[in-house]
Length: 116
Image (tube, rainbow, N blue to C red):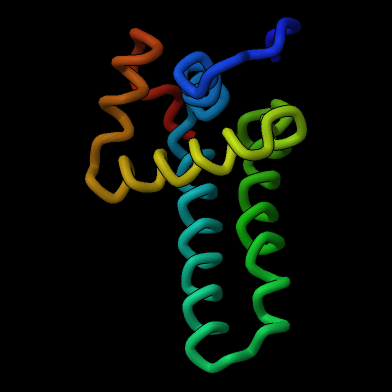
């Protein structure tokens, strides 16, 4: 992680993409975010307010698992919690549209990262 604090999301995004080079890391993030969104929607729909407490746990558990066991780096959430959340949703949207691999190539100037 850069020693100097980033000041804008535009500075943060390339760093975030670099921390998610592996497709499998992005897949774990996508799964966690999708499940968190579904849990959020279901909790609101049935007015199960305690379920809302599980939303961030669900989302972060999958993401942190991928950083520890797949990417082998420290989640940016610890230093940049709001930008990490925003970047996770941006990445989720790019994955849904099938454009995240292209974004990795654009931002990092390399292939879509290792297959794992």
